[in-house]
Image: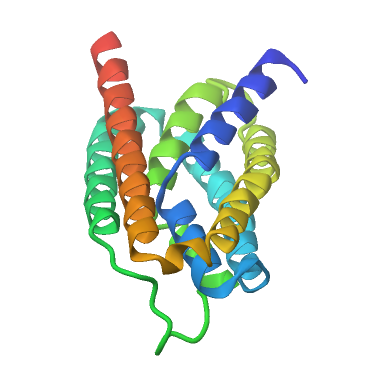
Length: 205
């Protein structure tokens, strides 16, 4: 593995394993439904995310000038959404056990990748950092998409497994409040980190 591939895998690992909408949904599904019933969600995120990544690299590989214009607004909007989500997680109550009978499906999670703000921030960053400035776009986009799927899969598995392990502990209101606080704070820190990274890149130009 060369330096660029290692840097790409490391970047995807950091982005995939830190708190975000996908991981929050996986942890919540693990708590409510267990690991086995959360597997379609996991595969939807990993495979859908890889496809989203491949298509985005193809698109952004031809639109670097446009990226410079839309990158910061997308990043800001995405980070504000993450902060809003962090606040709602912090205020969340006990997991629902009545009406909701099944977790989100594979296809729902595939489609969710296209409206996930953290995923779009990630796509823009990867296009800027790892897509070639010249030469064929298709091989590079395919490599990034495959790497995204392979690196993301164990990360989403970890979050679903953690949710499954927490099922019993979170029946206690005090433990659930602590869990929601930690998840909310972690998500807020992630949003702040993403926004600061975008501002740093803007100031460096």
